[in-house]
Length: 351
Image (tube, rainbow, N blue to C red):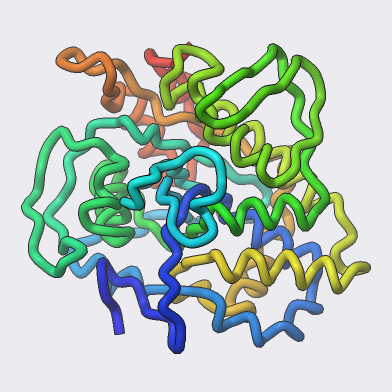
């Protein structure tokens, strides 16, 4: 039975993960690398929380124009519930807010992918949604994108993204702080190259220029730091998140997970315990099927783009979608076409 924005309760457990950063393609690549061995781990299915997108959104949705392409909304929040409270950074008040959002577009043919980051400070129009307490939230203009999750949960975020982009979302994924940390630690760390020193007391990140192999806790600080780079806004942090995503994908793809069943199980267990998906991906069987369709996607071919935004004229601490760039970007994704170079240029860059 759905509750609170379409989320399904986990039988026999009061745990309700409130989630931080999700790189949904990670689990797909883990499964693809490990191959059919994951069919043995059916016991992990019960770890996954899920909801049905159509039932949860419960309203008019965009037409799927490119039926052979797949579009995945990858979402997280900065809540500090469960084991996340012991990790650096985040919202200690315990209220979930979407902290990271990506629309991952996988074209027909499954040979490449593009990830579009939506800055959390973007002002958007929130459509009418069902709030977390079951009441109806009327449509509202100029609300911060990351507040939509707080007010109405993941179903309303999907609805908001579909309304602003015209892109029909096929799948949805989340992972929490502790799951992300466990994943990085399970694969033995991730190496990143830092162009200049980064010191951020708020996130706990302190790195010199050069290459660094980060453990799970350090990786969390890396992807959420904002005060040690650029203008201190969310826009600068997006660049670090995209850099880390590609480094992590490369690390997962490079490891011989099929030759290490114990490591494969550890990674799968840590991910599924922290994972929320739509009902189309809510078992290892479904994830493995989707993984096989993604085997041709090489991390080197994945393009990362920030949604083109400009600083809001009324509030320079907020941004709004920049036109015509944003419209051109979403149209290319809807049509499964090449994204024009002009559609990748953002007037606001975050330094």
